[in-house]
Length: 452
Image (tube, rainbow, N blue to C red; front, side, top):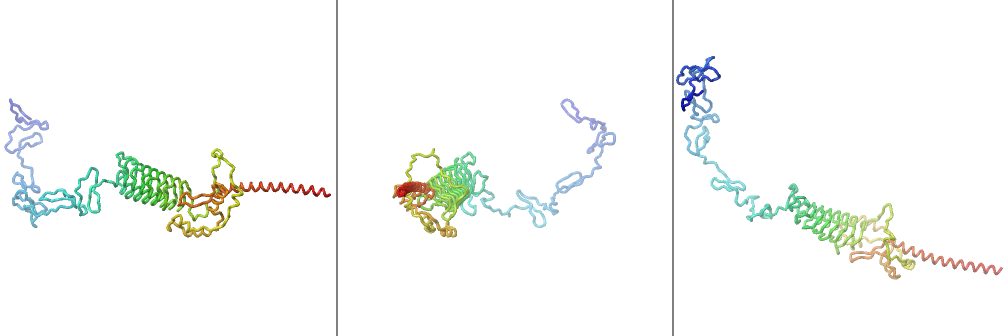
């Protein structure tokens, strides 16, 4: 469609390349266009095309222009007054007219300042719940905490790692391996967040623990004072006062509550409560509600109201020759047994409760009445002790108090041994008497034969 003459380009005079058909060589007049006559493109007047002005436009002759009134906004007229710089269209009740934007009032909301027409963040951020926020600079990782008066920067000792569960956290030693887990208000509050492998669930559970390891506390203030290791507490105030004790197990509310010893076990509400005296007992066990221990290496099953303990087999005591040494036949028998005074009696339940410092809240009045009504047979431990001492017999059947908080007891099974010895001694006497009788009978027979 172009000709090149020297260095000059011009439209090809033939312009005969449109759709590969000829274009008329007739010279067009001013304003004409090429029109298809069915065979060729020929110059012709552009007089059969109608144009209309749409919304916002004016058409004068063949010239389109913007509608000078811009009068089609919401089908109402817009003023033709020329606006000045910065003005906006405002509705005057009938038309849109140019006007200054000077009656819009802006206010600064919570956390913002407004200076002139500039908004910025409130520099003191002092509008949280309408109280001041401390201006102390926080350190990395701190959050705002309420101290009762102001919001102050503080360490984030709340939810950590544990899916942001409220009042819960796990270790924050950088490993994020969940070696310790604490759930509840102030649970594990003082933990040093190293690999201590502790678990606590409940208000103030393991609250004082800093670096004690491998502990479990489940319950309100369980293991509250703990700094020891390998302790398990399940129940309200279980092992509450334990500080340096290790290897203790407490299951039930108020179990081992005053303990500070090692390797103790308590199962049942108030078991091994020890609200008085020495609390550093070791290797003792209390099983049953309010079952109490008064010394180390002691086991108590049931409380003072229990009236039957048993099963389907007798108790078996270890008695293997391979485990015994210094064996001697020095058991005192008949001499000791003859000094014993068998009696009947009733237990004084109030005296027992007073001695063991059992609070009324842990006593069982109905069960105690039944126990007090039982007529029992036995011995008085102090009398048995004196009887053994008087014959020089170190009798293991008397369970002597281990401290001022402990009491006497008797191991009745131990009486079998001196009783057996007494029967043997008595049988020796009977055998000697029988020999004497046989001898006398023989002598009488001889005398009678002589008289014949």
